[in-house]
Amino acid sequence: MQRQLIEGSRLAPKRPNFYADEIMRKMAKRLAGPISEWLEDNGPSGIVLEDRLHLMLDEASSFEGYKLAQFLRDRWDWAGIDAKLTEILDLTETYMYDAYGEAITEWIHANNIKPKFDVGKKLMIPSSVIARCQPQNHMVAICITSIDQTQAQYGIVCPELSVPYESALDWEDPEAYFSEIS
Image 1 (tube, rainbow, N blue to C red):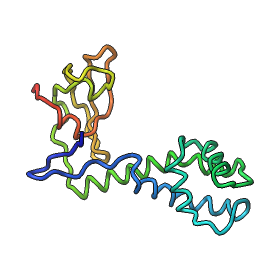
Image 2: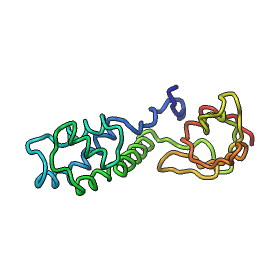
Image 3: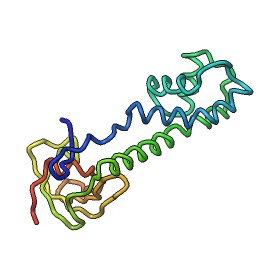
Image 4: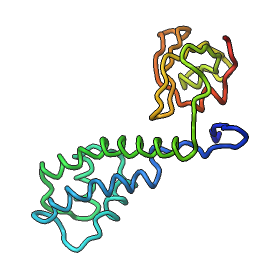
């Protein structure tokens, strides 16, 4: 299902995807600086680094530095893979979260996204929205405990599940599925 926020009378574009191409390109760009310094001493020359890193990120099965270094060695015959390159590549996941956070902030500002509910609001939503293993037709009560304006998320608590549940929920999730309690 395509989730979109209703703002006034128009639909806002869908929230950026964590693995979207623009996020992968930002990560490749951030990695390119430190890796190009490493390449001066160790790696192949004459490559288009950002493009190669973007392909690596698209094809990699893990963002762990050691596995990415192995990927570079196995896929493109990079020799001289060492601890320094692995350390640089270990930053990939951090860069990804940073790039994703920036994309969400840009999405919020570009579309004037605002939360619909206030802290303290109680809602009924399908349990499958907060706990994927729950049945779709089982409704549970949640209470909004905080609002994160930078990531467009509600902090919620759901005491009804077998283990009391506290988490963050994208603004558009309860707005798409909710029914109000109070």
